[in-house]
Image (cartoon, rainbow, N blue to C red; front, side, top):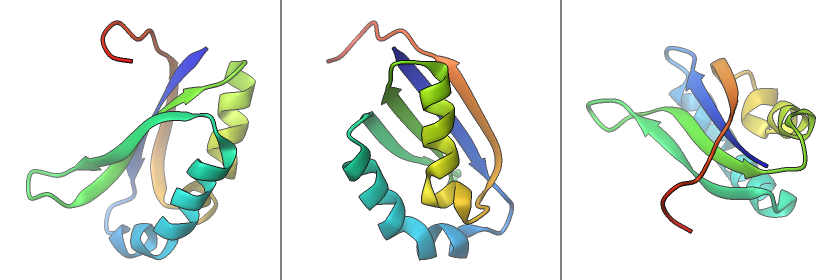
Length: 91
């Protein structure tokens, strides 16, 4: 099952994002369930959130993945939304 994770950072949390970025990227690589991922950008190009497409067995697995993300553990996010996602285009 594909799940989209859409997370928005707390205002002024860019330093938290930068400080935890390496751990976040290592987590993505180590879990093996991320199909696509990248930051959400402001109009000025500043990172202000994340979009991650997970390939997991259940929504519970997606919730567990999201809760264990180093960004979440560092308190980066203002909000996190997990939604079933249906790939129509791409690979």
